[in-house]
Image: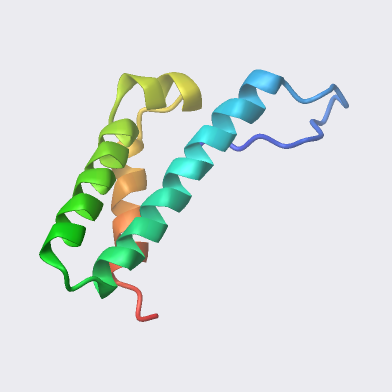
Length: 92
């Protein structure tokens, strides 16, 4: 994922588009982590289905053209793999 910094080397103002794009991607990752943790601790079938559906929407975002447009990258699948490792292989 492309990293944007508030201060670039040329000391220009941050690009609002880049800041927004980064915020959207970060929020999707945080939502995925939160839902994954919730899924691990949920025992109710209907709640698990709802969580899995929400996670599916986020998965679709990471493999979409929209993600590529926002990030300038084509590696949404590898980001999802890392998120899955983080969410499902963690011991918290």
